[in-house]
Length: 294
Image (cartoon, rainbow, N blue to C red; front, top):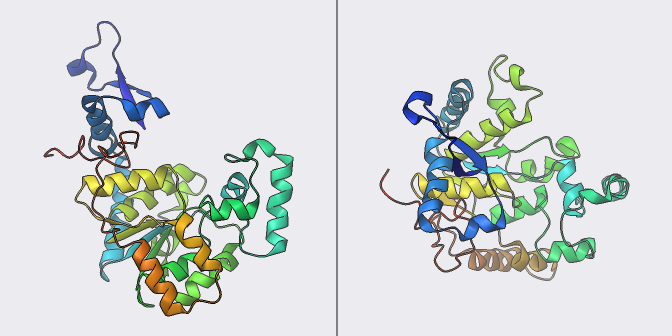
């Protein structure tokens, strides 16, 4: 994301047609005054544009999704590097967890947060991505029908199709950008993960509902962007509060569904005010600085 305008002496905006923006995504940026926060919003959600080929391809894929009606977009954070960096178990069994553990031991600097916590403690603290089984249970508990159309954004999951199996079994109408593409549309971008992420971003932005399985820059940006363009529904799983109920085998599915719905009763997609917590990032919580007429 971008924040501060840097203009060299003699710089002419009309002549050059652009401003040089210094990258600044630090904790300090959350406490800037409203006028600069509004600038951050305008840059992130209004002035910034994807290149024409990427934007057009993303929009084409979004239209292909909408041809059959509303859809849910889920940003699944199941890539190998995500499991390594979060210090969490994959939910795929010892075989896969041992692979992650070995890679993490050889790169201890990859672990990003709460170094002294066990895997179980990290999960209960809400620091782990939801795996495919947990996403499926979560969506089902919220009332998503089995025929719901779901666009899955994100990189290749660690464990391949096996990692996605619980979600596909519950919601068979799973769609990815690879499934939506025609001919060789994606071929030029096979080794360009940033472009593939941009396509995911565009399709997710257009969805009826968006949900991230874990935090991250893309989830935060989409949360704010969807608010900026019209308060589109965004569901942020309350992992810290709900994970204990995933572990409790004594409660029925009906009770589980009731609990999950109560925990997320305020997930109506409306942007939350930053004024209650001024330290919140304006890119994820764009009210009130961002929400002028545009």
